[in-house]
Amino acid sequence: MNIVMLTTYYHPHISGLTLYFQRLAEEYVKLGHDVTILCAQHDKSLKSTEVIMGVKVIRTPYLVKINKGMVLPKIIFDAWKPLRKADVLHNNLPSIEALPVVILAKLLRVPVVTTYVCDITLPRFFGSKLIDKIIDINHHLVLKLSDTIASFTIDFAKHSRVLKNYYKRTLEVLPIVELDKKNILKIDELEKSPHPRIGMATRIAADKGIDYMINALPNIWKKFPTAQLFLVGTINAVGEERYLEKLQPLFDKYKDKIHLLGQVSPDSMPYYFKNIDVLVVASTNSTEAFGMVQVEAMLEGTPVVATDLPGVRVPIHTTGMGEIAKIADSEDLANRIINVLNKKKVYPKDALAKFKKQNVIKTNLKMYNDLLENH
Image (cartoon, rainbow, N blue to C red; front, top):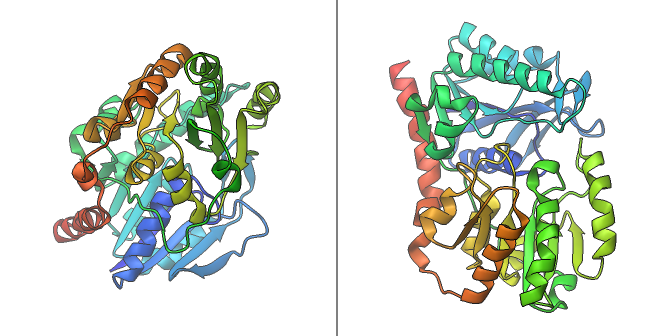
């Protein structure tokens, strides 16, 4: 099968949104499919065309950046050749450049699959609400034109600002969640620290609720005075400069208790998840719709505390491996973390059967084949 996949960011950028499509594309190649990724040249130093792990990557230069989004006027020209040979186009939303590519696909009679991962809520600045609205309209049009719509969870689809209008025709298709354990690397700073160790695996961004996690620490220290917080992920994230400035005084205040590890090697992530005592997903809005890091931690036997967001709460509800906290509530977050740290519970090995990679790949390919048979 010739599969074209469109996503704004791709390797070497790292986020849940990016890893979802990267893992999917690389697994398709292993099964003998031809895969082309259309994405933004988010870093001018990146090649416009290259092959990564068998996946052909075409990067379109951006005209202007709007927070994390980019205007890609050349995307329609870059999409023309691969779409003419494609059996299916698979979009990864959010993506403002998806609409012209979808229109081109429809003109070329190429079936369109769209996975709607999350809503977009920009950090507040002059005109941000208007931009949010324009992006929502763009996504509505893409979804209306799509032959098949997918979401990581129906829970999220029912509550999404945009996707709730289409949830009755939305399929639940989980992301691939896996950790490469061939060459596990230790993290010295983590290895030498006392317990309990609280982890967050996220870029520093306003919607991730890092400030609520930090403000929960004083209550946690009353019960666990030696508790340490370890943050893994991009520190200087695109469009999050103001939020980093807001957090800096807190980082300085608790510098002996908070460890900013930055973007660590993928080979270190299994060690990270196995050697923390609890992972926290403190996200505050529907920009977070699942949180693949939850399942990655659970695969290493580590429980999770996550906020009560549609989709985000599903891994804990499914496995029982953790607790759900109120959104943007540092006190409740602290109490939930304390509960998990007190339990030291052993979880059943079959709790994660739903998230096996083979099942996820099979579901995605069936989605394509069903579409091709009926197209």
